Image (cartoon, rainbow, N blue to C red; front, side, top):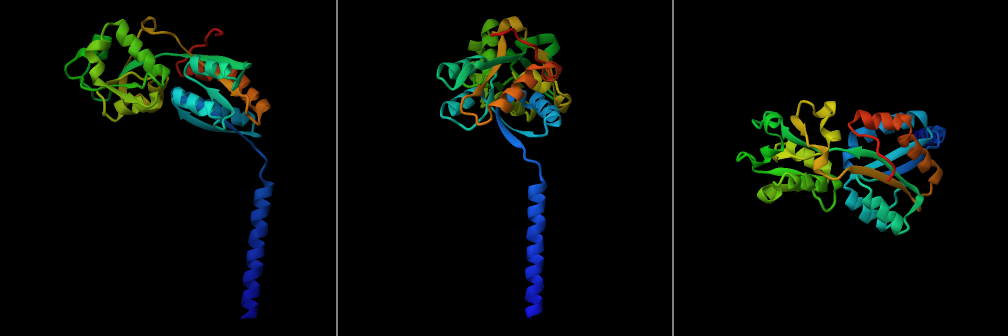
Length: 265
């Protein structure tokens, strides 16, 4: 019996030693917490992969959501290191409130909105364009909440530009962010939606619907900006990631996912 207990004890000690060796042999990586607008989901995933391949000592922890919700969280000192908004308004407010230094504010991309219908829809976007929203078959139109998501505000502006908003406002279904808006259409919970071009032009969604680009003169430019939070414990790493996004590699990915490079704002 004593021999059996001794054997168990030795096995346990050996296991602990192996576990300790495994844990201490792993390289020490710095975790950078990123708050990113939902329209960046696909592009930022690609940027994350390339960045971590080039900087194995930095690991990105990215959360996606509406820019308005992130603004509220960051105003309450949520523990993020860097913020990528879907507009310039929210990062500018954080600069004004003292949460981001003026020198750490940066524009990084300009986006577009599209009309999108699910796979198998009888609606003909190519022929009707945005006037399709008046079709009697359209019962629900998905957009992001314009109070929280800049892409949702752009959708409302486009509808007003074409003098459609008052006729269709009762059909609007509001997503918490632009990614949820695309999901409403993809799952056929809405007949048509107004998501970001970057979310529907990717291979993952090519066979899930068809899109029509809304003319960019129908809504205010969607210039996206970001900032490094003053509360970050990793300012050097945050600036390193910012420079990567603004550099050739990051801008190539953003362009490939349907964004354009904005002028400084």
